[in-house]
Amino acid sequence: MEKTVLIELTAKKIKLAELIVLMCLFGSIAAGLGLMYLWLPLGIMMFCIAGIAFLAFCYVRVWRWWMNG
Image (cartoon, rainbow, N blue to C red):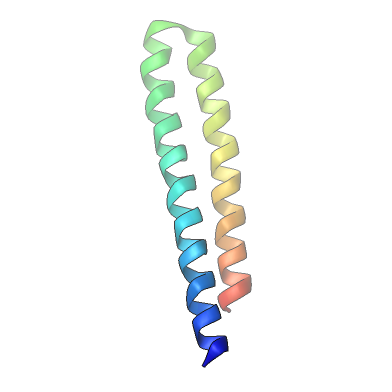
């Protein structure tokens, strides 16, 4: 029983982390597109942040696969 509850809590934490990283990813892409219109270097920087967020998303997905099988 305790193990089932622990697995469910871990799954909820992983889903929350995945949601946060996805929001950061799409927010960075949207900000990058908007800022490219205003100032190119800042827009490029936001796309770099989006790339880092994508790597974090991949890490969370692998972590989810590793923990839940």
